[in-house]
Image (cartoon, rainbow, N blue to C red; front, top):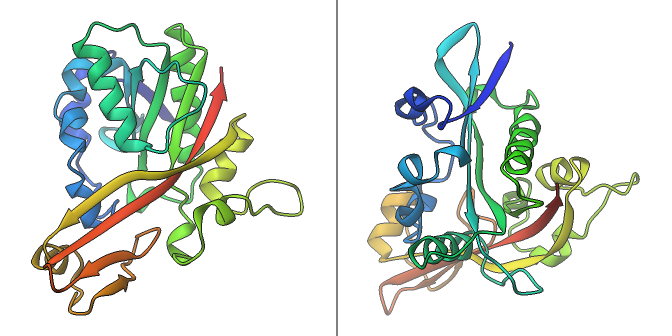
Length: 247
């Protein structure tokens, strides 16, 4: 496979293909994060140079991987406890107030389920780094969602992110890709994404009964979902790991 990785600024015709073949790429409950529409609803029109598609040159009508990022202004010395949601919020405020962005935050790198295991995530990250640098930015940050964490939902994220192999690289595969690319793990974003809903919502999203108060282990979740039967409510607060790339 020979890949062409381009932005929507270069290939706006690829926009309709960015959802084809990606069904099931993310757990269904994640699609209900309330902050997402502030970005995805306008990304193709307002941030086309930060939306990327990987196309097989032998099959140019099929996108095999996609990536999304957003420019924002962040001058505080530390990256925030909020992560994914906070990046979208700050980018929106930066745009609406006429602020000048000084860094880029990655938001998503997604590989078609039938194309995983081929090293495409590293290629998409490299393309994102290169594009941000060409646009004049010296920093790319990422609220990384460690892809091995769903197997260990009860382990605190700080403990999980600190685990390394004998070669000093992170145990988690996705964190390892970022570190190999030159990223530096900075801190945990303790409330990177929050999804709440009624128990009926969670039953429809997960197929689980949600009939007992307390923590619920949901496939694909990084930490347990907190269920409150008496109040007909469950909430998921996802931690991510901030990684900073100097470009």
